[in-house]
Length: 370
Image 1 (cartoon, rainbow, N blue to C red):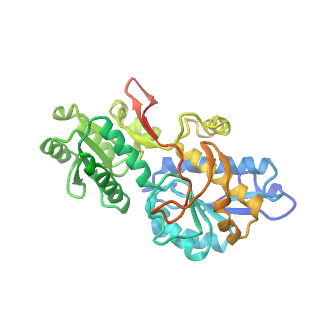
Image 2: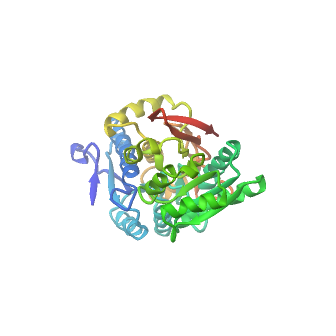
Image 3: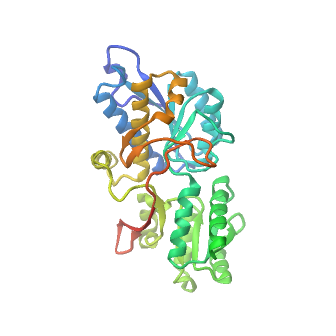
């Protein structure tokens, strides 16, 4: 358990705090580095809201719960946070976890602004209670498929672990690429070792391998095996889910971790707010902030604006989604109803395909952009 007021509510003498519940993966098997960046963005924004006077004179308080990439743990956290009286929920990185949280929030009538989880079907049925900042998986992964085609790849292998998220990604790629002359070869990682993946790539004459697997394992071991196999010297490795975004990737793989294209949700230029926030996040994290940190900041920026304008009553927050117009770090944020998406959606923030520059692994190269 962790309660993080970020400018402690105890410093305020008039009025109780307005509480936001934050769902974040902070321990394994969650993607801890992503969780740390998400939390850094959330906390920075809360601190700035409070320094500017809070929510109509009341401090904004962040009540953080670690989901550890566990859907059941996340659903239980939603129940607990609802009992604690939070006005809304924020955060979550893992799509399957966010889906469980969204279902529970919808059932309880608790507004949830999802920061980073992209799975299209975040809820089974359309809901008024949930909104989302990050692009839906189908939007981003179709842009990634366009990149693959433009780079000349038509025989694409995907090393995929069993998961709703990975299965959805493979289906999006297959459905988009097939009418355009592309072939997707699925390699089930339930039975294959990293060495066996290399043999399959040779047998299928694939020109690209996409990692639809967890980080750090088995992703790191697969990359090491492919990079060391002379038969596969020309193959492109890709990671649409963004595994190479974080410093841990470069630390574990060194030069082998470069030239692996992935998706990130940043514009070519941040807004003036974004440029200022980037400096503050870099100082807070001790490294360059990922797009996930900006998603965290923007989440609180939206909720703070809604709370100031419409109050902390849950139903009024949910009713306000279509009226949001907030300048975020990556552009103006508005929510709308998007075909085949069951939640209120920001359609769309910028999408880039980037990789780490082999000549300078700490530098990212933009290869393709929406």
